Length: 90
Image (cartoon, rainbow, N blue to C red):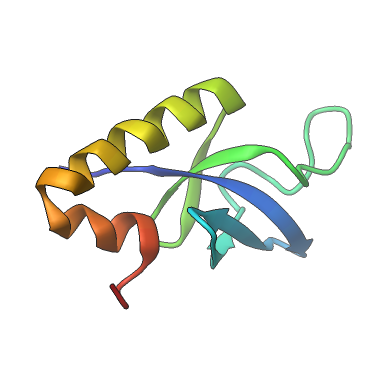
């Protein structure tokens, strides 16, 4: 099973971005979604689903927040979900 974790793009440098997931900044490759939208506007501030260091797709903010809330609820009963949300350090 593959899980994409929602994160918000905080900075972009070429195809690489810093994406915040639950307060943790992660290095994420934007090659699959692009660093600009169809009008040429930066994706800065947009939400993406992150899987193994890649932004797999764009996601709207409401859906992102709902998904994060569901994952945080899962974390309460299954601590292994914490690695997805907060990184391997927890």
